[in-house]
Length: 331
Image 1 (cartoon, rainbow, N blue to C red):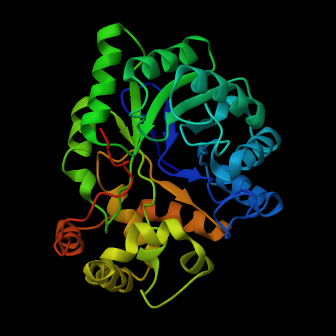
Image 2 (cartoon, rainbow, N blue to C red; image 1 turned 90 degrees about the vertical axis):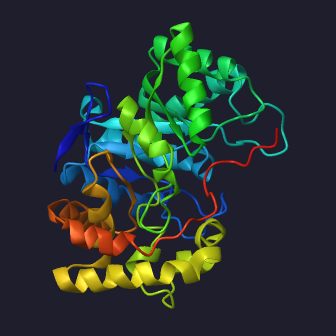
């Protein structure tokens, strides 16, 4: 396993991050392809055995069940000081109830305590805002996050899936007030969704902010022919909303991934991951594994070097896509 500094911090993270949205209770959440605790634990153990030290979860994943599974497994299999643990806040935890989501001071200070209890730890290494909250003053959000760090409940803070102007605004507010700034951006980025290259990635590169892309395999679309289906592809409404509308535009790119995989005599996921891992600005893609072999394959992708000509071949068919990930602004 390779380790890198996490953006402009001194913290070391593995070049692969295990994302745990797929661990939970399918009866409690919208996703019906989730692994239960018994089937999730071996994957977490395998990640540790492979040298992965970076684990990403969120309070909203199965309404807290993912955090519980991750917390118990890491407690059993790892030394807390050896792992980098991230969780998130913002999405609605108690539907139709007031103060159950968003990024108000009340919500942040309450949800960090709930997350720590479920994770069975007294701190997280990275506390991430899951989306931008346009209904809360950014000053209120950033001061609350600063207080979470100063209280010792989080070592660093990060952000996810927003417009670059929103991210920059938050950073400048923190900077002006002497508050803790974000050290990472978890954004939607893969070979068939590259809108982040316009503003967010250049901004993060310039500010030395860690980039940890989610959906690096486009929810599996880059790993198989478009006419092939899986349980997730047939039942996941989020995946459909992210990629179905641009399916025809993406077809040629997916075919070229398959072509290069055959040339390199590797599986398609390795080519899709190698494309990301070969980019200097990418810190650690977030891999959602349903099998131990998925993690083994992801780690093997670290050894694949694509030529400049191959990268261009994979990229040249891309056309602009509608923004997917950042919440639409209403104000």
